[in-house]
Image (cartoon, rainbow, N blue to C red; front, side):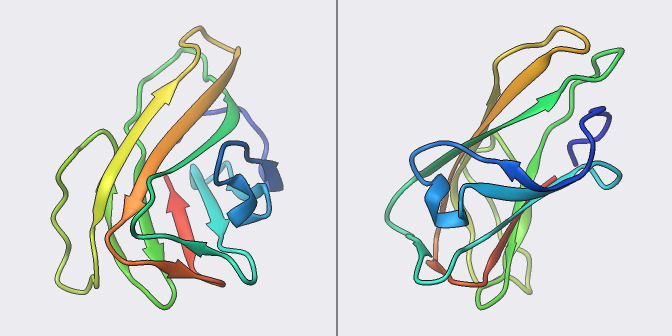
Length: 136
């Protein structure tokens, strides 16, 4: 989870990047759970053959404590949670796919400053309208 950010919960946190429109350019940020939920929009697909890149901004906590985000998917496809920045991921027994790519980066590590978090990901199986990607 991405816990500790003082960024308030927001059901329409702006999301940018090449594939942001797949999610309606927003995600639902739950500060208490430390999770961002992206919903694949109607008539959209997260392709299994394209590496997706999205970014969102959260405030860094005080003091700044590093966390490793994880990514998972649910809906028509279940992809097990996996830590980011791990190039090869194993799927849990309930999962129907894996993340072929999952990395994260940040723009700033100073306390109480805006930090653009960038996630790069590619699922092994396509995700379709209504499927959820959870970053936490």
